[in-house]
Every structure is written in structure tokens, then in C-alpha cells.
Image (cartoon, rainbow, N blue to C red):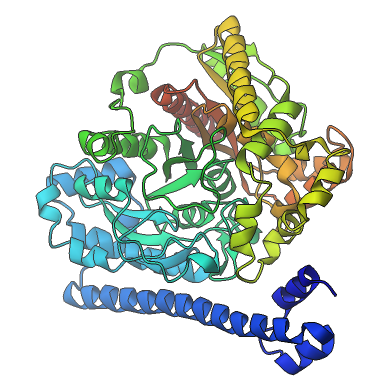
Length: 575
């Protein structure tokens, strides 16, 4: 038994196994296994301590809410948490609602949602202390608004675990730039939310905090990697949250949980203080952005963050304030579209939701122009996958290796653990693993971006409408279906702003049509996709809206148009 086999055996062990049994199994490797067993004891202690911290924060929050309710017998949270963000900010500004009542209302609701969905990693009890200072931020755009933040967004004194044991017990010393700006705008970060192990997965489970469930169906995943945000906001426990997106990690949870999510142009918002397990990418970059119940919430968050405080705290962010005029424009748009990218055939509900949205836009006076993604196989395999995992996944695996592997990550972990020389042999057959210099990869990526922009200009389109992955998957399929990410990862590679807007729900007819789904290739992955989305009746379905780089306000304006037309159509059908 070689070292790697011993390592894998120990990682798969139950912690109660003894060194004696390990020695019996491993023979001459007994000493190695013994030390590995001892290390596992330390790992389990770290995990246990993290869970204790979370449980303690939950208990403190429950006590604080209860105390507030005793002191304010007329307090009633449901009327507060049901408000839209514009309504809430209006009532906070005119004084008809006080920040303490709003915070405790959302804290109470978040505790309830977390009990059902397991979407939080910790309640931020400093939020209560922040109430004492909040009056100094009365002019802030988010004065008194409780906000949730993804686990990997730094908050002073808290871990940014990324769902891996190697990052536990390392509380950050200062807030991330975005948290500092949110506080200056009067917002109150009050809860951190769950993520998948290592972040590079669109499920939401890790060995530290467990599996997050979908608020629309407890038998489904909430998506990832901002899955805790999607679940908490979708369940009503937060009105606005921050996530990160390197392959769909904001848009997928938004679509799976029936809310809205926006991935801005990379570096439109500061990513200083955002933790990751794969730092150093140059061709496919992480973007930080908001999730909310509606598009106006996302726009308000962007307006609040794009201020002088942001530009001063992080001079690498271009000092471009939010362009309200572009966002509020009502001029007819010239919209590119495609229903099928030629790589993954949309599920029946994805395709129907897309067609219905396209029809609504045409009837509203917009011009729709066919637009097909260019060289998608090359973009997805050669540029995106290698751009995210430029080192073959060694850095990510080094983080995963330090603790137990979550079941939702098994398929990916098995691939990452393949020795380098075997990967080189496999690359003769499987082009995604073909090695090339990082400089060459960046050059090819830049050339591809310019090629797509040239096609965009040739067709003279303002924005692009395309399908959004959905409905929410059954558990344990996300890690085996990276091929399903073609609709989202493309816009991380291109660095185009992109957002998800929920427009429909899965019907019985959609579900019946799944029986006839063949896919683009008719291979094992297409069959697996059917199993992943099966049983989705009633689940939300979204579309994706895209614009050119730095035209984030145009993307949000397009998202708002889709949202308003959808709402008007639903109202008409009711009457």
C-alpha cells in the first residue's frame, strides 16, 4: 500500500478507529497511519469548535431577540420582514421604523430560516453593538438595513473558512472593504452564510457546517457557492446579501432559490478581504456582487457601494459611480439571444421560461437578434476550466486534503487527486487537461474576449438574453456535472456583467417533457442532468441577462425590464 492509498484510507476513516486497527490494515505504514489518526483528532476538534461557535452565536441571538420582545410587547416582526428594500429604507429614513426593531425582526426570521435550511455559519452579534453607533450613518443609503454576507467575506474577528478545515481558527484582523463601506452607508451585517467546501462547487455543503437546503423544496440543493445567501434570502431571513461568483456562484443560487443575483464586472466592486482557496487566477476572475428579492435591491446595493469610500479604501477599483440615468432609461433595447448554447440542452422548464421571456420582450417593443456563443467548447474547456484551475487543482486539493472530503465534492476531489504524470497521459485523450503556459492561456483568453466583442458589435446589440441553469438540482449531482455550467462560466471568462432573474416555475408539463430529453450529445452527462433536475415541479426558473464590461447599469436595467414585464404578465393572467 503506497502513501497515497494510505492517505486516502485515513481520510475515509471514521475518527473512532484506533491506531491498532489502522496498523493492522496498513502493515509497515502503521506509524504513518498513527500520526495521520492523531492529525484527524485535531481536525475533528477544529470542526467541533467551529460548530460550537456557531451554536453559541445562535443561542445569543435567540436570547437577544427574546429580551427585545419582552421590552417591546407590541413588537411584531412579520410586517417588517415582508417589506421590500425600498419600502424598508423609506420607513427607516422617515423614522416610522427604528433600526433596532428591524434588526431583531430579521434576526428572528433568520434564526427560523436557519433552523429549517442550515444556511448560516455564524450570527454576527456585533450587529447589536452597532445599533449604538447607527445614528451617525443616518444619511447612508442603507441606513438601518440588516445585511447578510457570505462566509468568505471578511468580518473582523471571524473566520473566512471557505468550508475547509485549513482556514479554521484564523479570525481576520480587519473588515473587508465592502463590509467597511456597507457600515459607512448605515447597513448592519448580522449573519454569515454557508458555502460548499473549497467554494468551487455549485452545491452548498461542507464537513464543518453541513448541507444547506433549498427554501422552495427541502429535497433540493440551494446552489452554490453563495448557497447560504440564496437560501437565507429566498427563505425571507435576509433582505439583501453579498456573494462571490467565479463560475455562476451568485447567479445559480439566485435561480435555484427564486430570487435575483448580479455578478458585476470584475473589480467594479472591491474584492480586498475576500477569501479563496484558489488565489492568483489571471484569466477567470472572482466577482463580488449582491443577491436580493428584486432587481431594485441589487441596484440600491450597487449605488451604496460605488461611492468615494470604496474608491479611497481600494484605489485599484476604478472610481466609477453608479450611473442612475442608464439604469432608469426606458429606451427600446436591441437584444441578442440564444436558447441553446450547443453544449448543454436546456431542461424543458429552462427553455420554456426563456421563450416566454423572449416573447414578452418582443411584445414590449424591443428588437430581438439571434446570437450564438462562439467556439464554446474551446472557451469552456481550454480557457475557463484551465483558467480557474491553472495549477491543475493542486492548491484547491491542498486545502481539501487537510480535512474530510464532503460527499458533494467526492467526484471533483477524486479527479483533483490524480497524480500529475497520469493527468499528462490522460491529456492525450482528454483535451481539457492539455497543459500550456499560463501566458499562452491569458493571450488566448484576451483574443477570445475580443472575438466575442467584435461579434457583439457586428450585430449591434445592447444586451444579451440567455437561459439560466435550473431548476434546482437534487443532492450530490452538482459535483459530477461541471458540464452544466456552460451558461454561467462563459461570462466569468468574458468578464461581462450578468444577472439572474426568476421568471417562472416548473410545471407538470415541463416535468413530463423530461422523459423525452435527449441532450446535445445523448451521453452519460446528459442522462445525469435529467436525474439532477428531476422532481422539480413548483421550483423557480430564471433567465440570464448580460451586458458588455463596465456596463453594469445597463445589465441591471435589462434585468429590471425582464422583472417588470414578467410581473405584468402574471398579473394579466390572474385577471
